[in-house]
View 1 (tube, helix red, strand yellow):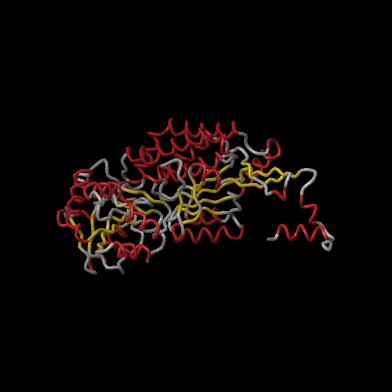
View 2 (view 1 turned 45 degrees about the vertical axis):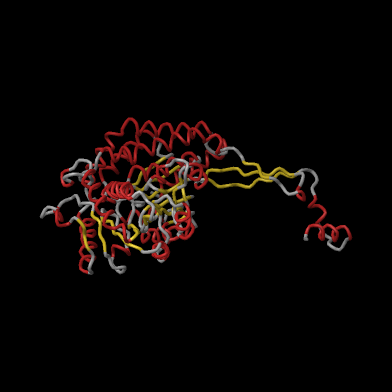
Length: 467
């Protein structure tokens, strides 16, 4: 790994020496090559993802990974010439005559650590922004997906020079060594716990970090929400990839008097979307047996503490042994249960009721800042009360997940859900150094402030400035 990094750093330095960094045409060429890679191999990539998961719908991979990547590339190609332009800044009168501007320089070599849940989107999405900013990149693929890792490695080697993009495979030991490399920027997507370890590994090199972490993303249902459509939206977005999505709704806050109607609509939606879920080609497997057991343990613990799992009685006798776990609503969950303390990352949806909106807001504020916040309802005042009171990485109103798919909106967390953001222009900024450039004329007012400081002219200028 160290040798690959050094080769990329040497190639980047050569770029700086020759042209000051990759030109607009070079950056666009690399983005178009990445686009071609995706279009020419999309079905093969979908097959590799499905094989590593045991099963995942090709349509989910196309819609949730390939499509957003293509749109991000198209957006960057369309706007990159404007992003790269120096941005003028007005100079104060006492610095005149002066020209001031900000120039965005590529940082160098970017490291990208990829999780298993959306391996294409979360490997190549940051790569789009890194390439647009003129960087080179090394990608650490997830150990849990050997087939996807081999496919991405083979394609990157086929389409790109290794001094531009390089792919690393390996276990946790390799990932730790990767995080400790002296990158010019490191992006990690994964859990908060592992994020802390990545931050510690990067600290000796003072490597700039972007951490895309998780958390418990709440869905607040207002009193005037369209309950049927809300239930269907939450069922759909919770069931995508069997809930193994970092911005999936993690729990619902619901007016107490609307609980029974919501549960009915939710059960109908799940039955409509994934009938016979154990054999449904549109529904994904849980990634592996250990994660499935973790999810089952969370449910068992909640039930032992008095929670009610709705629809469990209608499940097949062997449902716990199946690679597919059903989308289930859970009520009366104690606050101390793991379902309300840990990020679930699966198809369980706890529902917490409130009598007054202030109760629901207080419940969210008592928890670490989430990666996403969802509000359902038409009451503008209620909506703004929630948005102002509960900080989060991103927000969607009367929808879920869409904020991640928007190519012009930054994606990132806050507090325990992460730091920094990427996508679109904000991604270009993340992987660029904003360099201040000031060009002064032959004369400016600062000459009047040179020593000695005892003169009458200096005293008058000082009084004029400091007032």
